[in-house]
Length: 331
Image 1: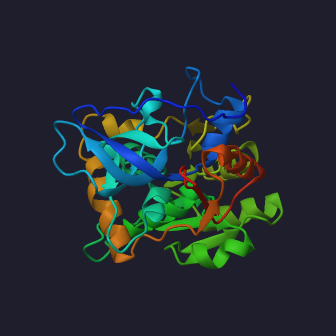
Image 2 (image 1 turned 90 degrees about the vertical axis):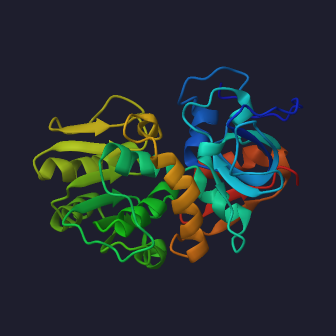
């Protein structure tokens, strides 16, 4: 726990009936991973291989797999129920559940698809599986729905895809961004992008003026951001603040505001949501990228192969906004 990651040899894995072994060509990093590695944010069994999103070439398939074959280019995410080091993406061969694996369109680089898989279960699980928002339908015209959603952190890796997902489903989205990322976030479908670098009280006032909101989601979920988004929920009478992380210390939200957090892929396994993971990975992501309707964050490559995973985690700890860090584990 909290020690630097080191490179070791492990045996080549065998897939279960509904699993694939993927020759991993792209590790895509998510901010939560530096918190797992450096802060021991979540309990885990050590030694641990972490990492949750990746892409590459199918090396072998399980006996019940029908839609993937050896040689396919795919991108995948570690599901919340995946237990074992074979599922961690910080290695050269990774086991993936076919449910959380997506074929890479022929006109898309594998690193682009991989950059989105880690956050996709969170977004679908939170907005549709838990909060009950409709799914986007990328084939037809957008059905306008009379609900407004605040997504705090539109230029974060979770926020970037969240703004697209919710606006594609027909909801009015308000989000936040720094001036540097304002233009790119504005193109994702948000009705309004608020400058989060302004003074705290001015920012809270600006957000309240855009409300009331039917749903408030904080994709940054640190103490400073929840103080702001929590104040917005409090001002409209209180209620739930959906967050992508648990609190790091004692909760300081207003008494009429409740932080709602869980591993957000969990709702995908609940009764009534069984079709959501397959739709998300086998339809939404593939067709959205192929058609250009899903816009990925710009890619920033970290050189040096597996030995420089710690370099990427250091960069995440310092703060990354408006880009997605990726690394080739074979470099």
